[in-house]
Length: 147
Image 1 (tube, rainbow, N blue to C red):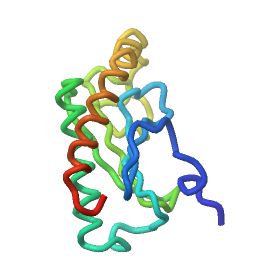
Image 2 (image 1 turned 120 degrees about the vertical axis):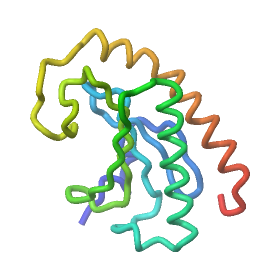
Image 3 (image 1 turned 180 degrees about the vertical axis):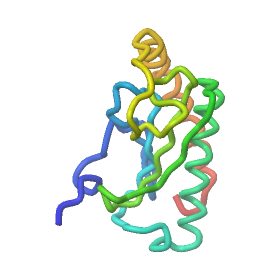
Image 4 (image 1 turned 90 degrees about the vertical axis):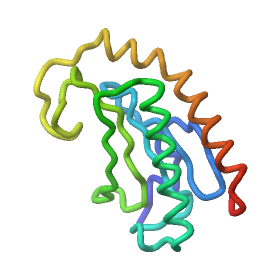
């Protein structure tokens, strides 16, 4: 069976390391929606070694840190579902009290209309967010002996 995260990046590639990559998801209503994707196919978190699991969670934490610092969200959601795409990946989503679905999950029905002006303003910040992500992840990965 074909795996979309083995065949494609899974979104706009922001950074790639030896073990994982960070992409910006193609979710126009949520421009601060990122995924940390394990490069090799793995279906479950426990398919990874202990060192790989630690590496993965350190990357997730760094993505969260950058989103918090750069965007000052109300909350950051982190999820690993894999029900539709059984390739290990973590969703890291900066959420705002004004977004159309808040406080519900981005997959729930919307509670209000999209605030297109705020979404556009957030999207304009993405180049700076991407630069910060690349810097934070590259510095960290460069200090890791296994990447």
